[in-house]
Length: 441
Ligand SMILES: *[C@@H]1O[C@H](CO)[C@@H](O)[C@H](O)[C@H]1NC(C)=O
Ligand SMILES: *[C@@H]1O[C@H](CO)[C@@H](O)[C@H](O)[C@H]1NC(C)=O
Ligand SMILES: *[C@@H]1O[C@H](CO)[C@@H](O)[C@H](O)[C@H]1NC(C)=O
Ligand SMILES: *[C@@H]1O[C@H](CO)[C@@H](O)[C@H](O)[C@H]1NC(C)=O
Image (cartoon, rainbow, N blue to C red; front, top):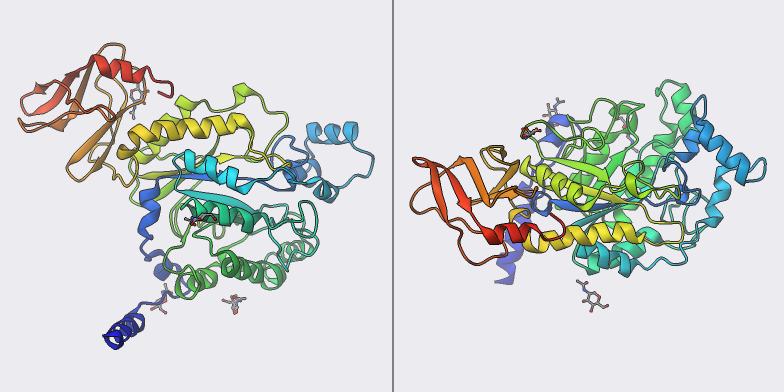
């Protein structure tokens, strides 16, 4: 009996298709099913940029990279820091002394998200883990003296959430990268000696189920060796069966190659795409990393977030919502409040979101903007504005005498009548109105 099982398993391995290091082959890989069912993820931008906490996570570039530099960053530094103060000198102040990964994981769980994606390395090159290829520029050698990637991995997985890592391919100021750039990307010093060994090491150590690649746009995928890396990831890595990746693997890849598509940051398609996609967006509309100069009016409020989530899911996307923790390791309570608010809405309405599929029509504007999702023979009509009257009309659904209309979170069916013979419906409800008075809608 045991012998038979072993044989069966062995023959399964032998016939498994292997992916070749070209886009035709890699793009044909089916996306692991957990990802589409998850719908909501939390994105976390945390690094040395959280220390100045000014402007955005692009602070170093805006201060000392771009020409001309951003005068706001230049004057912020000259007013508050001694002359000659360099960006790497922020790292020892990245203390994370209040970082409690279990508290973070508890907040992420309470948001209703099913996956979490942390920056393992942003464009500044600082790794939030003990990378042997980022000597003295990582969270274990300096700053927190702690494996942030590993500690959050344990806490997130303990909440039964999937764990993913963001990784920037380019590093603004890495000397080897600058050599390759000067050579028009005809050399691969940075990729061969730094980037690839680090990425292989990261995957083997932390087994991320999402690799959220970024910083690809200055060079073609052939420079980054992206197809060889992905072929290894899909064929031989410890996460080959469950990992998903995005589409930032070289100039021109976005919206075209890879796993799911992000296209641009905060991208929302006008109509239902044919390929799985994800909208990444940030509660702080000005920044992904923590900003000490953040104002309340610059944040997405809860109704806006929920509308955005609903529209994204109705159009077949996943929603990756970002928060930026502080250098002390705390999640600002205003972000926590937003995340718990999304979770409270999903507690009642999650049936219409998780594991749903886009319906034949994605929206109906007959009386109110309404987004549709579906599951089997059930259609969910999601109302994200408060109806002015207790009458709602829908034109799209085809109805019959067997049609039942219910409100999630309310066991009693609603009264309804056809709008036209066998098409459309009108329904009335006082409790519907009451329901929509709940905070969060
Ligand atoms: C991709 O690789 C496969 C397997 O090696 C090969 O059959 C196919 O021709 C390649 N496609 C392209 C476009 O190179
Ligand atoms: C989470 O941690 C607790 C305490 O260490 C442990 O008992 C539990 O099994 C863990 N749960 C998961 C899903 O890992
Ligand atoms: C990178 O790609 C080149 C050409 O495809 C290949 O020769 C080389 O072995 C690859 N290097 C790594 C580290 O994958
Ligand atoms: C629904 O109607 C509103 C108001 O006319 C319009 O702004 C919105 O774009 C419409 N929604 C869709 C998805 O077409």
